[in-house]
Length: 231
Image 1 (cartoon, rainbow, N blue to C red):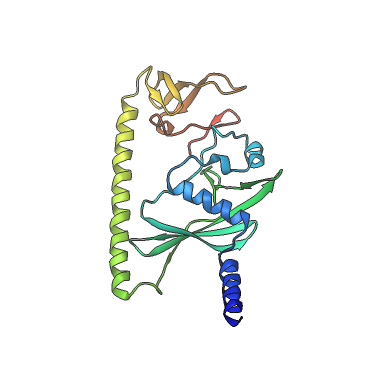
Image 2: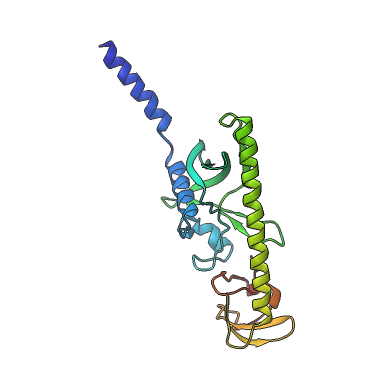
C-alpha cells in the first residue's frame, strides 16, 4: 500500500511538473517551427495584422534560426506571457524569448511587437532576445572555450553579412529594365531610383523605390498605405 501511495505521489509530482498550458504548448510549437525555417505567419494574430494593414502574404516577421539549438524549453508559463528558452548544444548558452499568446475567437494566436520608428520590423516575441551564459553547467575552461567559439561564430556571421552587402551592391549597380527584384520586375532605372511593377491595391501598379532599398528576388516586399517599407 505504501509503495502504491509513493508511486501515486511521484506520478502526481512528475505530471504536474511536466504539464504546461495550451498557450505554452502553442508558443513552443511556434519556436520549434521557426528554428527549422518553416513558414510561421499562421500563428500570428489576425486582429494584429488587420490593425496594421497586413496579410499572411505581406507580413514580414523577423525570425531566429540557429542550427546549433539543442532543445527548447518553457521556463515561464504565465499566460498570456510565455517564456521559451533555447539552449545551444555547442556553446552552452541559452536565449530566452517572451511571447504573448491570446485566444481569438476560440483559436490561440501570437501577438507580435513592432520595432521602433525607422525600423518597422515585426517581431514574433514581445521583448528582445537575451543571451544568458549558464555558469552552473559550464566550468571556467568550458566558458572560455565557449566564448571563443561564439566570438568566431559572430565573426563568421559578420563576414557573411559583409559579403552579401557587397554582392547586393554589385547587383544594384547592374540593374536593368526587366530584371527581377524583391518587389517584381524593373520598369525603369534612374541614378538613385528604380521603378518596379507591382499591383498594390488602391495604389496602382508602378512604384518608385530608392535603389539602395531594393533587394534581389526572394527577400520579401511590403507596402503599408501605399508606401514601400524596407524591413
